[in-house]
Amino acid sequence: MSFANFGLSDEIIRAVTERGYTVPTPIQLQAIPAVLAGGDLLAGAQTGTGKTAGFTLPILHRLSDKSIKGPSSGRPPIRALILVPTRELAAQVEESVRDYGKYLKLSSMIMIGGVNINPQITRLKSRVDILVATPGRLLDHVQQKTLDLSHVEILVLDEADRMLDMGFIRDIRKILALLPKQRQNLLFSATLSDEIQILADNLLNKPVMIEVARRNATADKVTHVVHPVDRERKRDLLAHLIKQHRWQQVLVFTRTKHGANKLAEYLIASGIPSLAIHGNKSQAARTRALAEFKTGSLPVLVATDIAARGIDISELPHVVNFELPNVAEDYVHRIGRTARAGAEGDAVSLVCVDELKLLTDIERLIKRDLPSRVIAGFEPDPRIKAEPIINGRSGGPRGMTHARSQPSGRTGAKPAARRPTGIARPAAGRAPAQNRSGGRGR
Ligand code: AMP
Image 1 (spheres, rainbow, N blue to C red):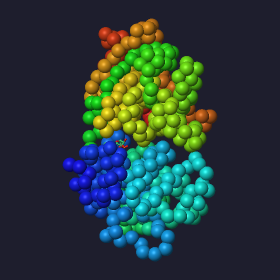
Image 2 (cartoon, rainbow, N blue to C red; image 1 turned 180 degrees about the vertical axis):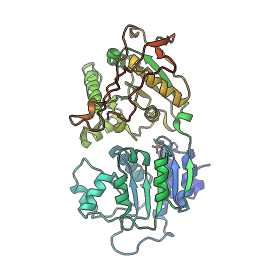
Image 3 (cartoon, rainbow, N blue to C red; image 1 turned 30 degrees about the horizontal axis):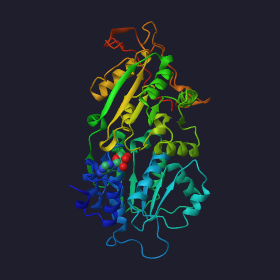
Image 4 (spheres, helix red, strand yellow; image 1 turned 90 degrees about the horizontal axis):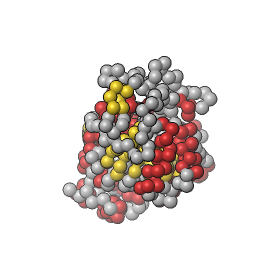
């Protein structure tokens, strides 16, 4: 099966071929014909599966297909709206739209917050066929009456589960009310939860449903390793690993914004150029850091989960969990950034005694034990006791939803069994209560 079999236009095939794709991914095999057929779609697929091309290619085809009637006079209206949760994802999706559509006479625009609105207002005065937007800035334009969505033919909600997680549901409802009733709706979500199902029931009309395997079922191209290490020595170990292995491009995850800043500062002081990206950084700083990292001129990017959401770097070789995520699913999202679409990569986790319960949760989720290897010179000190994980440091003075009080019990109970590698696990059934109430400290 090749892209030519879908009946996509020659211009699109040419762009896809130049991009180096030869075989469609499973999501593309299912999504492209469904979208070309014109009906609604509910797709369970996460980043890394090739979902962006899965909706972009058929949308480009439909919008450029003369046999499908568009409006005949006046300035052409916006015909496709792609809503995404984060600015980074918007940038990537819009770049893909431009790239795959480079031989077509269609024009796209990105609309995100964190940057001056005036250039966007100017841009809207000329032709925009495909708009890629985050909900907040889109509604700013609606309020300023600078945006007309009354001719949208195709709506995409990308990473819909994240949009709900980030509290965008009311914004989405407002936006839906601005669209024509008659349109094609495509909903993409990594998880098909009850909440997503409710959204889908309201939004979609007899959708084709497709689901591709989650990465945790297929991520066998990723080599996982856990390095047990003391809390206070993680920074040294990370610098050691980067230098020893001469890693050129490594994405490092921390739990908090503050932690991301501190770690980047430490690495710089150790002679390793690094930048942190998180929600408190300006959009310009985030974009610059990401661009430098993508081109390879910046070897280390330190990110929180939200900031890294949707980052697409092809063949990213190394992902380091400087701290394990509070929510096991985020491990899967994090390592979804490596070994993408056929490449190989490794996922290194630096795990201290505080995080053993989190590690157990991850292993349960991905249904495998992660191999553990102590690095000589960084052996954990068995006398160090587990401490509660403070999630909320990054929440700022107001605390907001980030700051959660800790459960009164200690996070890591006394280790009951030691692994030969030196990492200890809490006794089965006696795992201490972790704070899992959703405070992700981003
Ligand atoms: P996505 O899930 O859309 O973020 O895409 C993940 C990565 O896979 C991106 O780097 C794409 O450029 C790449 N990709 C998408 N489709 C294909 C394909 N058919 N063959 C190879 N790589 C692809």
